[in-house]
Image (cartoon, rainbow, N blue to C red; front, side, top):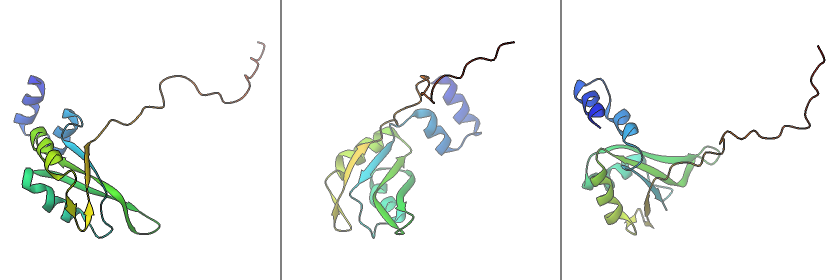
Length: 125
């Protein structure tokens, strides 16, 4: 952690990149988002609990509307936890929000090779 403090004090790193080093503790998963909810609406609703670095509403490219979920990233972990406790089950744009911590994605590439067909015989030299 001391190394990260040195990096952040040097001013060579953006707050978003610093958040990456911290992990997922300050990033929240928000589902139940209305089709009319925008990223600005999310920032406005969640900024009551602390500094929001990023709010992302996931869009369906074909229908050009939200998929009903998004992510909110806070500057500090305690702000994210406060927002999680306060906003879970609250109404936003007429829909009930369900807020949870972001879980790391599953790593399906665990180093075990996937079968690609029968083995190819080695050429005799």
